Image 1 (tube, rainbow, N blue to C red):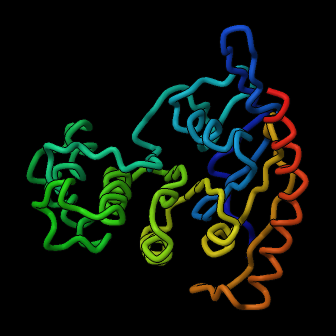
Image 2: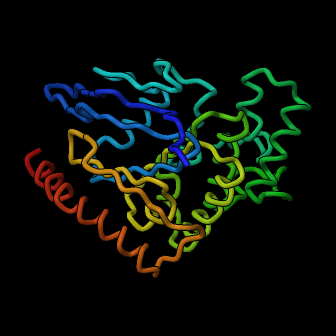
Length: 263
């Protein structure tokens, strides 16, 4: 069986931020190919440019050099072909669960009844049936993040970009959300690019793990995770892949800490 086609591609991506009298090179000659329908997870030390890459892929930031291609076409601005799930859900407090999920559809000009029907499908998919009329302040952290995922999926993007979406959750809720995300992904088979600091999470979720260097961020290594789902945290093969990722990361985390000491 052949490999699936390249969906998202970073070509010689460089991003430099000017911070007063300092220039911070976040990414330098970053190259990556993300395959269609695969779940790709990016890990790396703090400040290595993981989120910067996602923001450029989303069209929120422009690269200093290089480009990102989606289905072979350059990404130049945000668009409905990319959904984004932030670290914080950023829900509209005056809108209900259903209203928040409908938002992107309304912006795209989908008629209200059709938008409502489609949004209800995603309410069900993320396990929030019965909460469609609830307001964000009444929801737990995990429930809010489910709304964020449903909102990003509702307008049927080609790629789902996820920036540490479970980072703020407690350990038990995080495990539940990881299982839920895989269940949703197996239904939708979206191309997912997921950023995390957690190697445990990366090995649990990913088809492919991309390990980044310390700043300026480049790809240090790519590891295929050929394990059946659902995955067992104590399985020997799981632990072996986790060890590989940790070994690749160790040197880069040390470099990153040294960089921070110099600032």
